[in-house]
Length: 270
Image (cartoon, rainbow, N blue to C red):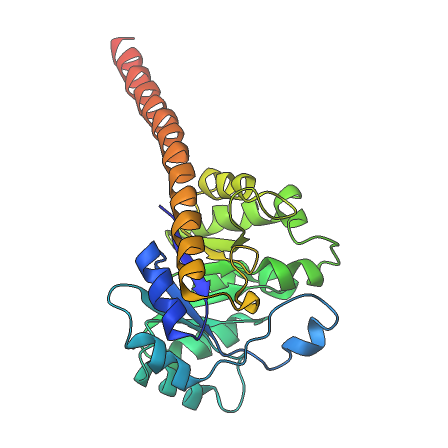
């Protein structure tokens, strides 16, 4: 099953998400440069803090805390140290362009948390082989929003249609690094319906995805029970679709193995 991630700094919502089956609570501290490059777009800029990490961490029993840091800057080491000391399980590095930035981030984390680079610049894609050669990358994620902007696309999911995401996923798979990309809405929602995106995740061997603002928008300020009901039903529907995807993946995997077995038998008899 995909590891589902939801962005929030609210402990009450984090508890609801975890109880509904969300695997990771995503605390988003990135703000440096984000407003400038996404200006005018309907995107979320969260400005979460290290205190939010601690507040979320203490109410969780099983979900991991994923923290998106700022791009490499003069204060990165202190930001990373504070994130770890406040309970971050996974640290995400956004908007890098070189392998050197990723290496610096890995060194600053120092094995105290998992490292997840966020590939979201064309420059990072150009040097992805150098990045994947580094030791210390635990997972990797493709950020469709900024990457699509970098390539001058009108719609972030164009990167699915033009093969960009699939080419990257193949490289990640060959290196044995777990990977994911983009976000999904609740089933039946989204400009590109969520069920189509989930099936692409399964086709490409993805292991994680963000539940986007289209899955549940906290700006609606609804009462707790409505939030709980939305998460419970939304995650359940995703898991049901995943079960269907798993069934077909199993079918084709079994067929692949049977073909390999029969070919070996035929060759041995020749």
